[in-house]
Length: 291
Ligand code: ATP
Image (cartoon, rainbow, N blue to C red; front, side, top):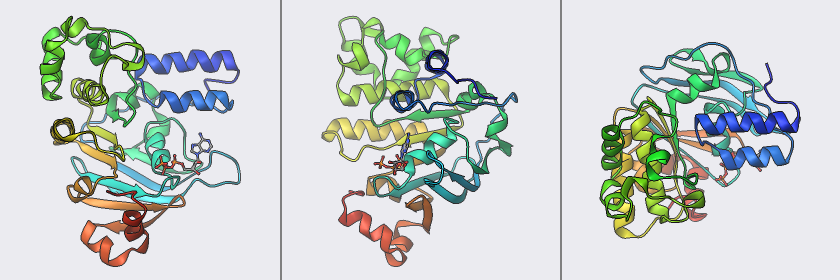
């Protein structure tokens, strides 16, 4: 059933989403602006243990008659790491949004551990999936609140362990108020790299079996970038990881790379095979989509 019809309900629904997880909020706002946010959900409870993910012939359009994703099929086995690459506008973020249940396919299904995600509650879906974005959304509040967000039962020890795993504990303990430091509006009191590590700490605490990463095109400066990569590497260990990738180093560490063009998968392989066989893949280097 549809949860949101009129603008007030849309906002109410957005608030519920915010409380569940601050995922895709900017996109959701864009949708509200365009009057298109319709989130429907099922009533089943997703129990994702292994974290297998499968797209079965998925198509999706934001606007009727204008296909954004067409006949996309792929599968990721538990704990496997894949990368999605493609030009700007190819449909990479849309694939991520579909996995998070922000929209439902107009055709085909998305399965997690064999369950069609359109049949489960958004809460249970989002409990199974962590999302770490390039433009991390933090809300005004303390570091503690931002890390523990959605995990009401987290203890102080859990939060400190998550920060340490995210390579964020050192800088947090040096801040004047430690864990209680206000991150500022949208995290304005922190650097970009610090914001990202707070969001990685949140994902460590949540420990969901499926991890979605949206990689920035531009790297942060030297040490910060190294710390960030090390934290992400550790976070993705033993998790099914789907990265929208822009770095060759990420692509090289993926089991397979999916090349998307105009909403379709046009090639799948490793860096070596794709470089030999895919014109579209090779063109991504020339266009600086992969650096
Ligand atoms: P980028 O690398 O620039 O983030 P992308 O590969 O992630 O691009 P998407 O964001 O998935 O691409 O966009 C795919 C297509 O869908 C684009 O043509 C885009 O303009 C369109 N699109 C994206 N979001 C919406 C929306 N909310 N409403 C309508 N069209 C959209």
